[in-house]
Image (cartoon, rainbow, N blue to C red):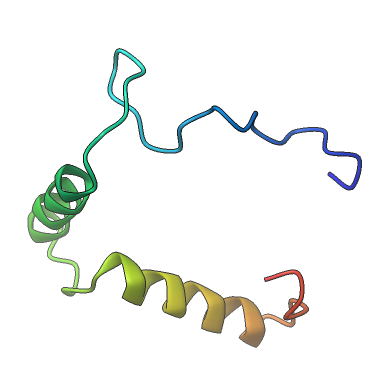
Length: 67
């Protein structure tokens, strides 16, 4: 990873349609909300998920610079 191996190219999309086209952020959020409702997960925003994940990584001993 330090050599850049395994990284996505800069033009790659993290969220893409089945055709490889960009998704609207509101669509991603809406779909996540639908899935969360279906599996009875607590309501949390993507921003909240980001902070929760960072907190879990810190708790697991991951270096803050790495996070």
